[in-house]
Image (cartoon, rainbow, N blue to C red; front, side, top):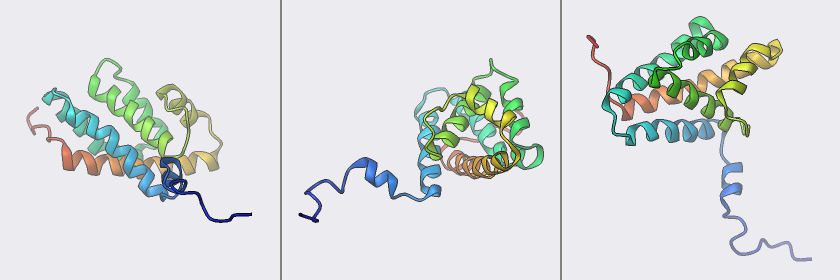
Length: 147
């Protein structure tokens, strides 16, 4: 029996992703979401989205994950709020290797998980929010103090 790996078999994208740390997964998912906004043309949306990303960690710490999700959900017609919530749900789910990245599933989980799982999700979400904040600070413009 040959125990040597086949040429090229080790360097697949799936195997590379499996070898990442949890924090690397969070960082990658957050970068992809914030970078999509950065590549967009709408400067006003970039500023408002940046503000929401910068507020996420503080909101989670002060209000809890469930209330933070409810707050962001309360303004479905505001593209910055809905975009930040959609991306936040995607980052949290993707970095936890969850295949369902929808806002509806994420919101339902924050409302219905047992306490121990909710606590884990809250810590994980706070770390994801911190990565989104870091990338928003690095890539996106700040909203005016007046606007």
